Length: 93
Image 1 (cartoon, rainbow, N blue to C red):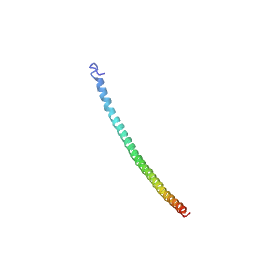
Image 2 (image 1 turned 90 degrees about the vertical axis):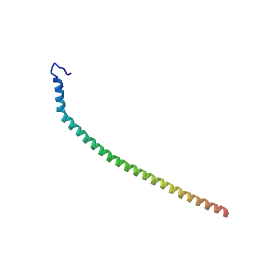
Image 3 (image 1 turned 30 degrees about the horizontal axis):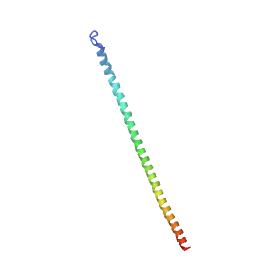
Image 4 (image 1 turned 180 degrees about the vertical axis):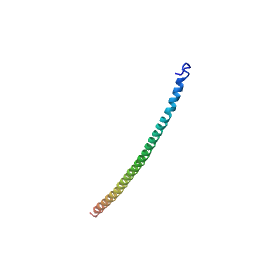
């Protein structure tokens, strides 16, 4: 608490402490900014990696879906061909 009785010495001491600590706080802020920049760089790298993984997964799923569709078309054609062969045999009898 600042009082007139000590000629505002407490205020002067507080100002002196602030001046002394100013450089320490500046150095600390610079270190924090450097750490944050490094973290941001790592996060961007990880985001790129995860985006590539997502794209790879989507391509894989798309390939599987295409393969399943191709297989179902072949099965249908084969099944249709079998039924047609049976029908022609049945007509011959």
